[in-house]
Image (spheres, rainbow, N blue to C red):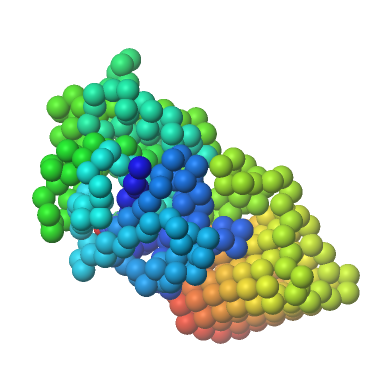
Length: 368
Ligand code: GDD
Ligand code: MG
């Protein structure tokens, strides 16, 4: 069975990280996200994929070119020259599809759902489409799905207003589609599967639900990306091969005296941790990161080449590639630093502040 992975979105909510790295490649435990997606699909019986791409396709193709272990796993790339939306992106992949039922996934969901169960359910029904549902606390950021006692979808409402919320069940971004669904999508146009195709299938009574209670998270915001990173490190994901108290420290790590590493953590090649510095609380350090003397990094992700200078503290935040946190600065509360930016000495960043790539924040100029 083939799968289409939708990875063409701009990743707006994960900016500034996604100015430089497509959402599909943001790392979890130092493995690009799409790697988890491939594991999930293969575990569910998928034996070939089409990547439906638009924004920043090249680094994604380079990632797959480097995956020697996937050389017998067919991968095709359908690249849009302008955004075609979630249904248009599937239609654009059609030339690589075999005309059999197919799986479609949003390229930003981390899940331990049993995909083969959704496929079986689809095959045993006469519906044209089966969508997996998961429950969330606040459905307003998702596609809300009402079902009846036969698991037929009664209503599909993308991004409901707060007063339209009637259930906690939402679209998990995992579909099994009969090839006929592709006939409903016009070519070369921007079409949304959530706003146009699902309501149409629902009206025809041919959209069925598969409910999953497994781990599920959309990684598309700083909060959810960081939570996914924590979950992968603490083994909460199930299908993502997690082990509890994960500890992976590359042997090239240069460690200062009295430095502390509290698992679960992941440390990639070429990192340096200074004298009395500490990293822990579900932190990932990408390649070539540096943590200066006495600095503390907790519950955070540092991307390749990021640096935290002596005495600085980073908690629950995302430090972009080659970004620098100056001496004694404090970065906390879901702050996100873009690639190559520099936060000068003594600044305090908090409350989800985002610093764009390359920006230089002068010493002691920000204090929350
Ligand atoms: N090829 C292509 N072209 N892909 C696209 C495009 C496009 O124009 N626009 C978005 N995508 C991809 C994104 O890269 C992402 O992987 C996926 O489609 C979903 O887009 P998001 O922007 O992440 O959507 P969302 O999170 O707001 O909502 C969607 O996902 C929720 C579950 O996480 C919807 O499907 C909701 O109904 C669903 O609940
Ligand atoms: Mg999303």
